[in-house]
Image 1 (cartoon, helix red, strand yellow):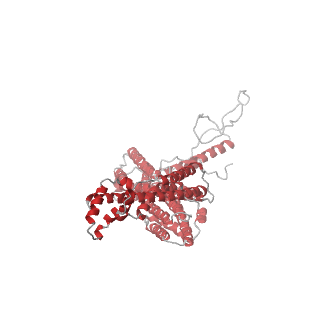
Image 2 (cartoon, rainbow, N blue to C red):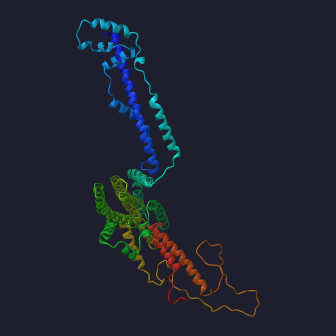
Length: 546
């Protein structure tokens, strides 16, 4: 074949292939559109699939139809293209004979080629193989309009509850993702806090206090007192900063009877003992080992296929996590640690729900357990810092008392290395000073002294003198609060209701202060002096008082 004839047959074959592909693609699109229309109607009635998924499938049917047409297309041969040209030109197998010349022999070949070449120059491939997709487009457009009408006008039904169940599953998934995000954010915060943790300030305060103790001079009693007050104020402020970053264990700790009810079985009692030991010795390893065991069990549960076995073990884990959560609040005073454990428990519970992803929920619970360990370390470090500051405040308190009785002398503190040594020394010296009096206020100390002896009897009164005095009592309630008016008078007050009202008011104030101390709003260095003061102004009612 010459170039003109070959080029003609190739162009016709390509147009035939493209036309067949378009025909097949339109047919596929028609079938898929009809199927999706039925699927949309079923989904509107039953809500078996999310609406967004149905929209994605609608968008995918066009490329799917084209891909299927390309896969199942049977490309036409050169002989078929030649036969198409012969049929369009009304020739009797002229071009078909040309396409087969390579496999035939004869002297007529040059004549056939010459005739085909002359005919090929005037042939238009578009007329030989025309495209006519209109017969498929009309029904396709009709189906698309029907599907659009269903989409906009057919209301959503949920005959089998699929939509409600899907909404619950979606909500659980969103909740799980949110809790994992919270865990990740808190981990980042703790890492930054650990990197920027500044212990130099606490150490500097302790060193300043030791230096202040060593500089005390017996001849400068008032200067000693002012320096101790200054040191007490600085350390108290630092103690309050530490206390503000945690919950108070004493505020949330239950009474012994309540503790006995909460911790009844052997395992929870063991956990409580571990927590007590960690607080006493600062060794967190036993508690960390318990948390590691829970993480290992969560990892095993993530691989458990049996739902019954998984549910049983999850119930046991939930109880252990609840007990750890109570310990975090009641023993360590760490609300953040309790929140992390609570989050781990909630995430583990999501693994029991139908339609969820148990493996993902278990992974999230393990991440929360890792955060709990970090929170435990943070709580213990904070507690250790507070204990050191409390030792400093107790040493200052003992030093202040001793300075009032026997002015401090820094030369006596040369053997002291730690704040506990200073506290012990001051208490021993204070005990010696307190032992010098006779207990009746008649010793050589700076107490209130003994009872005095007055002269004279009862004052003279003349009841015959007429006055405008009216004997009545105010009905106002004496309560704790701001004093608005104070009048000093001489004479004996009436026994009975007035003293009782005063006692109640003082007791109320005393109780409020006790609650503030219990909630650790007041630094330990002030506890003893505050309690001593209120014991004096509001003594307990004795049996002789009426």
